Length: 214
Ligand code: ADP
Ligand code: ADP
Ligand code: MG
Image (cartoon, rainbow, N blue to C red; front, side):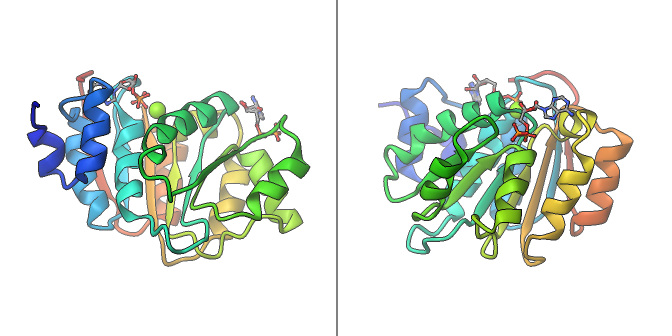
């Protein structure tokens, strides 16, 4: 069997390395190489790289290393601009939770039965992947407990702010524990994205991959 020196060196557990391998993923992309070690150290990160460069795994893999399956709380919150993206990330995550079967993830997005979501949120969920509107809805109804969130991902941050979600994003962030790691992923660095980073992140490490590389 071929070894995966790349992901192994980055500190990814063997069971995940194996899964990556069976999905045909043998080497980390540049953005994964740069961000994963910094995220595993617990630092805030602003990661900028073009679409299609593997940003999803760049945050999912560190989250999977850091989530404590024995704590039945939402520990990681991933906020995305669209339902489609929330579902895509959830599917990608499922690949790994199939083998790490004590880690539970839930997608929470608009258009889905809210009562069903409320029921599922009462269970032991470690990772929530959500769109801003529906997430705020649950927060206001107090049907989601985010008091133990220690990792926040703002995925496709440029697109999220471009769609007009700035007020929602601010309201979500300010309701989270201050003692958390914030990860911001974006294809482009707009003024709005920068201002979110300046306002809500702690000494973020800036990582930028210029060319489209995979
Ligand atoms: P981005 O969020 O940067 O637009 P994605 O995370 O959606 O990109 O990844 C784009 C595609 O690249 C996906 O199909 C994903 O499975 C694949 N991919 C991710 N990481 C790797 C890798 N290390 N090697 C090969 N393919 C990868
Ligand atoms: P809900 O459906 O509960 O309102 P969200 O507001 O989080 O959930 O967004 C769900 C979907 O609606 C997303 O796919 C998003 O792209 C779309 N959407 C919401 N607000 C806007 C907006 N202002 N402009 C464009 N699309 C939007
Ligand atoms: Mg992406």
